[in-house]
Image: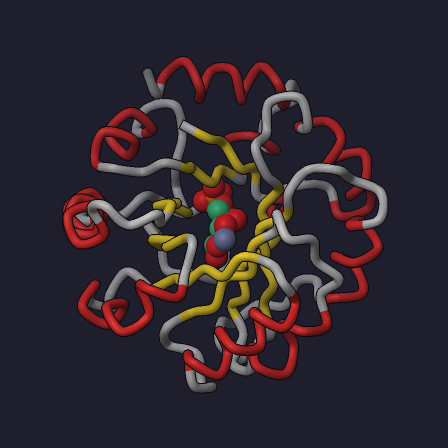
Amino acid sequence: MKLSPSLLASDFADLYREAMSVAPLASSLHWDVMDGHFVPNLTFGPPVVNALRTKVDLPFVIHLMIDHPVEYAPQFDVRPSDTIIVHVESADSVDRALDAIETTRARAGISLRPGTPNDCLEPYLDRVSMVLVMSVEPGFGGQSFLPDSLARIRDLARRIAGRPIEIAVDGGIHAENVRDVVRAGADTVIAGSAVFGASNRLAAMRQLLEAAQ
Ligand code: DX5
Ligand code: ZN
């Protein structure tokens, strides 16, 4: 299992140090970009992510919870090992959003809300390197994992069998449920409060990685 800490739960006054504190055990850094429209919350956008991009060497995974990814995706100064994720429910055309990500040369990913059927992903599966399954309603950290997410992950794993698509799962994951999430088919686990809510970030990450086995 790969672990991707979500900076949403970190100390925003100290983003650089927070990012560096998880670097030894993180396979990527997860950025929750919110616009106050697609979700009822606002976080950070391209200027903040790009500033950190020049200073931190981990791959970035940029989770766009915004209505207009076509306009904003190209504003991220990403590297080819980074991933930009759009929501299938965004107001823009998903194909146009994936075109916009292609111009950045980063990997493309797609995400879906807990209530959106996996069927909606089918038209895009040949265009993405990652599917991000939301296991909470997007918008806020620290929510409880929705139990029916496990069946959704298993269904997705069956659909994409044989295709080079990473399954990432996002929301409400902690040491008590991480093993179920991985057994259902997750390659990557996103953890916000389980990592940044702990005083010792690396110990919390080690605990998650061990619990997953
Ligand atoms: C929710 C975000 C998640 C969130 C996860 O909208 O997409 O990435 O940061 O936080 P926890 O792990 O606290 O549920
Ligand atoms: Zn996220």
